[in-house]
Length: 417
Image (cartoon, rainbow, N blue to C red; front, side):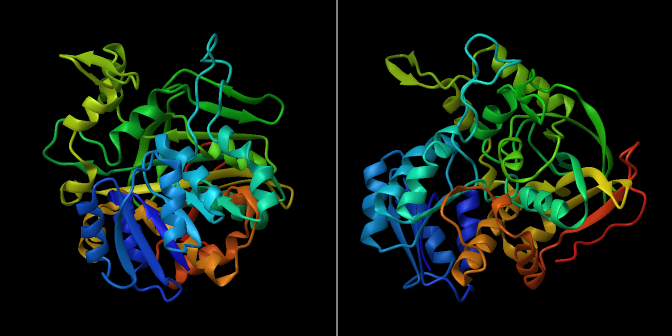
């Protein structure tokens, strides 16, 4: 498989380095707006001839298509901020090749009632092109990172193997990960963090469809496994709520994230000051978006991986009926920041996000996953995916939960694939 990787940041580097020893990879073109960064990632991932570096403006649809054609790639893999999804997605279509991303096209709040009604939903722009992709016989695989991505695979696995009837799917992310030495820092792009945390979070219910809430709504104490214990989680806008109901038969889908009171308060202040805005303002004759200023003065997550301590846990809580009885399980992946840095030299969240498109590319290259049109991870068989994770020793587990208290009732066990 020949791959055009768009973006050589934290996740892009993880993807390139984790792909370096895969026999299915014929060539990876590492591209970035910053050519030096692309060259560095290409070099540490194996260098010539399988890894080459190119400069690319991800906002330029024609440039994406031209670079894909020039290198004769089979797949364009999007590893940049979601604001660039559509030009990369369209560029891959124009080039007549497959496409994969880890985040979908952006939403736009309802203009009159943003905290009850949806406007443009996450992924709407891409799903509107499904017919065109199917007619061309090409695949656009959306949301194939950690979450969305593995969280969706967990939902599909649970529905296929663990339940006769699924009632609710709730992604819950947290752990005890922290960044030492900084008063405020994020574990992934601050631009994306602001986008998903301050947008109206979305919920799906079978009888109601998609609807929105106020940011940070409905806090709950969620019990994270492997000794972490209870951590407060709140509603955040996220792709799983838009993806899971399309393929998994269930009653409700939610997403909640453990942000912490101090982090939430900082985000609220940024919003109150207008510093979350994407609309450029003029400062001493120069136009700049306030959010870009925040991103520029916030520590780059790619450079502080060695300062991260603790564990990042991403998982999917599924409840329903099995053999006539209520059941609830939490399927999850845990990564320890210091261990990942020692083993891979990668920032932990970059690693967690990055290994998933690598697994998906392997399945596509082997023919275990096939499809046409605009699809999410739930559209594919989860079993070979988990089998590849097992092959490479990537941790994943499951614990049984009490359906009333949502607390674990037995030690975690490996997810059988």
